[in-house]
Length: 243
Image (tube, rainbow, N blue to C red; front, side):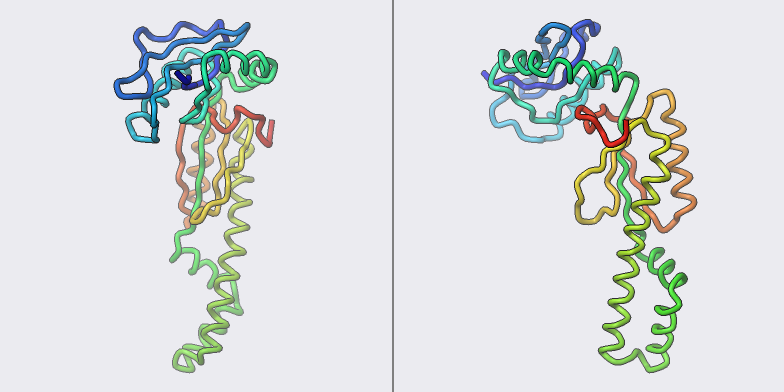
């Protein structure tokens, strides 16, 4: 039977809550595998596991319950090893790395911030900041809309200006929030987001970080910010970009 891995802790971590269960239907009992100074939270891996809501929540609950009593290195949903011996073998092989990460991440949480543009607000901003776009818009208006070539030119100018604004805003978001974080991990680019960044934040100063997010919203109303957290520090099991 393959082994499902939720996270890694110190072997000195307080005992799991009694009768904790994890993924699967019926839910599999969570147990602890110990190797030296490290321990892994595991259960039997159900066959055909898919990222269904119940199992995603079960995975998160194991990490939340364990993290409430001390630092845990979270594994991504769906982390499966061939068997228990494979898990303890990895713990032994990467012991120094995991112990360093447990020390570095103790007392921290992750906040993921995604940003998009409010389309109407950013167009207004682009228009107000570009005399060339305003002039061409007015010229086309006076010409009854302008020729096909003039409309095309205006459209290309607006698209270029919006893309430039996206790049500038992505940098500004990072610069505004990075000082309040212990580490930063830039997520993969994806359609629809101009920013996708995770911030490692000290649990005791999380309110300061969230206040910085609110300040960013107020100072840049053309941005729409979505914050997900506090989360286990998924993005920082491997060292981040700012330590």
